[in-house]
Image 1 (spheres, rainbow, N blue to C red):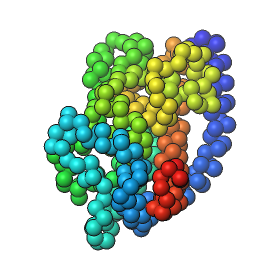
Image 2: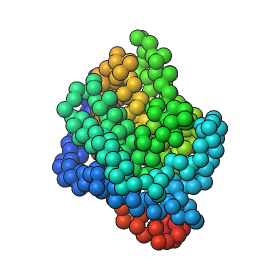
Image 3: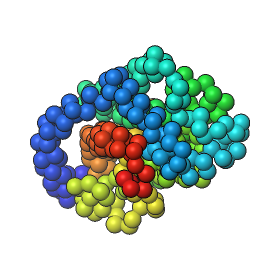
Image 4: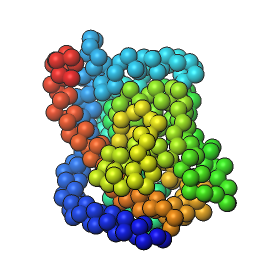
Length: 330
């Protein structure tokens, strides 16, 4: 490793030390988030949401998704060949308290599973961390989407929609990585979104404007995804000096989206192309290993905060939305 790279790495490690000093504060905040994972909290949340989505007028009928995006998405025959009404993704206003409580217990388990994966990621080897990170992100994403729409196993009507339970992402290009490769060849490989899957269910609830990337089956390479993430961090300048100042060829501005896709990409490398994954972890020609380890360490905090701060905001907004038009509140 050159002297310049060593100096850069030492500077970055000092910056990380400062970030680690803030982890204790984040840990205390994460305790506040845990109440949102309890079945009774989920039961009250969904009960309020059912009342809100049952409104006959306004754009809140699929809150928090835009009604126009939902109708467009489920109107696509390549996604919904059985032409199942988009209304079926909502919780039935006539659901019994007993059935809703059972569903809330399942959603609670999904949330705790994801939360515990992410909280305990530091207990695993770097070789295994991408899998733990991705499944934590995946399970919390399922928790979030099921909290807003009935994608649970209780809703059998949706079972005829193809690929509902798949990841919703194709990693075919990653499979093409050979035993002999360069770091650039890893960073340039693309993953492709599919029209339906767990990630699209998450989009529906978190940000329905992102659905167009699934509809178009958009491809993203790792380098652009990393740029999209690191350009918005405290070490953006260091990342730009290493990998260039050119903006990523991505037209979305969602840190959440970047974290989700990067974690999936890295998990596929660590599962199926472990020699390439090891290269990213131990690369001595660039500082890519530093940035990858930074992502594994801090992206989970970003993801948890984005999910739960959103839910905290919604908890006080939803009862108000029930008695107001969406335009006056949103």
